[in-house]
Length: 349
Length: 93
Image (cartoon, rainbow over all chains, first blue to last red; front, side, top):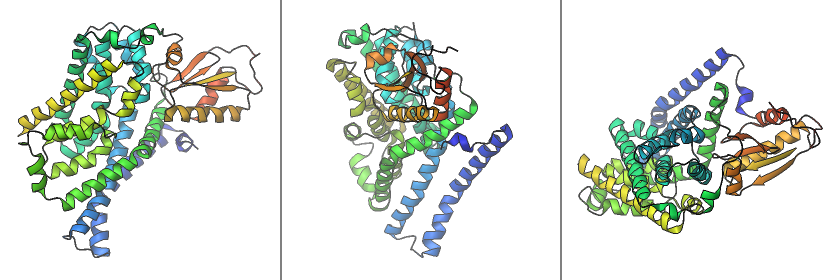
């Protein structure tokens, strides 16, 4: 049974259904806080000032809020992104030189729908089309790091300034790291089979020939797919957030990881790299830590380290990159993230 | 009819294979379904976004998991009507 079977056939029915969905989403979002206030404090009669109650309230309220936000954002992003594809991006990048190419690749990395399991075919396809290695790497770095779902979450939770900083920082790291790696003349550190592979057959552009219904359906299915995949990370993140919110004094973090702590960003990146989650999964934790006074530069560095450098993706990239280039890739990206963290802590202080 | 599901083995590839098997069963056609996980071969079909579907050596779909009914339409368009087999000439759009 697919979503398509339930969608009305007429245009009016479809618009009506979309409107109804948007209205129920908005209603649930607005009522979320009030319902839990009423249920926990008035009906069950818990003491709103007690720590345990506060933690419980934070957990249930935040879980629903984050799931609602994620569903809305994933849906919108998927529908919008269905108009782009890796095939179109490659056509735009073909023949670009380094420099301009790196900037374009990073920008396209943000808007192109991309699953890390496509990293290897995309890498080979780009190289076969004559896209320089450094430009290709800019694309591969920007794609997970500047994530549209993270942009949507940051925008609703922290406002446009921090969102703009996040986008700018991520793009800078992607452009810079790709450019530096390109300058190193890394072609000799790419597995030889990449250069021997010829793109055969006829290209099928996934973005072409879709009806609006299909795009809507893709949006709905993507919400289900992502939520099914990340719910354990979400629960852990929100749980940790709730505990931090209720039990850890503000002075703890400002003392040990405040803006004036010279090693704060380094520690955040060191913790973030081995963690494997996506941007949506770490957002509740980032929010709770921000409320406790952790500086935004440190938190952005943590988030970028979690999403941009993950073991599964490194294992995939190892298929096309020799260990030297993979090592250089990790080092350059990690350095970029650390620099961004310190820079924004200094700027925002 | 020879069908190949192209992809390194991620969730989407597993989903595409399941959807394809259902479509083949729904249509009641004779078809072999093969999984291709080898990267050079995948890219050799011109695929850059996985999962992808190849019918009789023709790439018909890449970069998404469609519904079973959409795959049914793709297979029918490729000559996969009931009872069709490899002896039937390949239908082209």
